[in-house]
Image 1 (cartoon, rainbow, N blue to C red):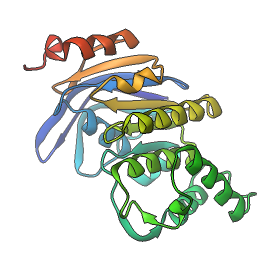
Image 2 (image 1 turned 90 degrees about the horizontal axis):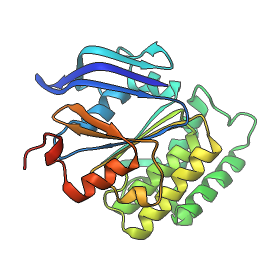
Image 3 (image 1 turned 90 degrees about the vertical axis):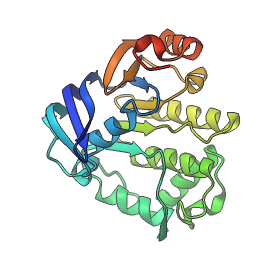
Image 4 (image 1 turned 60 degrees about the vertical axis):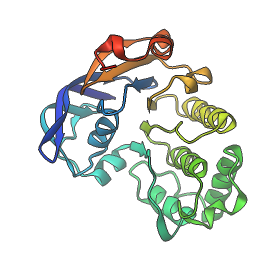
Length: 249
């Protein structure tokens, strides 16, 4: 699915990723944890193709294809989805029209024998499962949304678009306990419905793992993956922090 080898990347001349090695197979759930400034969000942006980040060296392959030079839209059409840490507001573009266009233009679109009405019904079902109001589809994308609504709306996009690789950048931040449980349950439903899709959760904390089982947990410190392990690694981090992995106190 995704193969990253000795990946180094920078922004504005400053090297952030200093040699990332990671392989994600179809159907796996990976969690990337680490302190502030460790490079977690940079990694997500680099995989998604953010133009502000420059890949200096290394491999970045998706489904065995080199994607380093592909634009974000081409990566998205291949099936790479990024749920943003800070979703942007898009006044004048409704949630429904945004998703309808994204679905239709997607390489693996399944909307074409469906009617627009059927797609709207499907989105309303997703919204209901995420405890979003019925008027969510009519509202401008993220405009006036609470922090929790923005994060749950990112999950609704994931469910609607059925990507092959999902990267969720701190999807748990800003969620209360109930919201966290709802999001985790929706991720589980997504993986059950799309068994070959892979999920990468980027987070500071292990609390979402109370509701969601990960195949692997990785600790990122100072631009490299310092350690990888199973779910028990997240518990160790929760108890002892990141100091033992090379992070400063």
